[in-house]
Length: 104
Image (cartoon, rainbow, N blue to C red; front, side, top):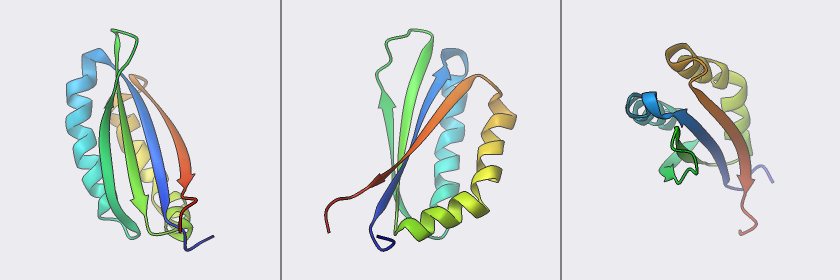
């Protein structure tokens, strides 16, 4: 399974008051992620939110394989996550999931 393409999805719920600044930062963050070994592409999406107080974004990162994701999680994730927390504190929430293709 280690040679199967992986998607790493990060869903973000952002306080409306910081949403424009957050999105500008997020675009740069995605570019930094894509410079890391094993990342092949990313899709940045806007989410429809039921709340007028929040905006939603989703980033789907595409990686070569599970080994590339494991290396990211071990070597880079703490630093990359800390940057957003330092800038925006508790004005956003993030959830993550790993998607594995069932196709060859």
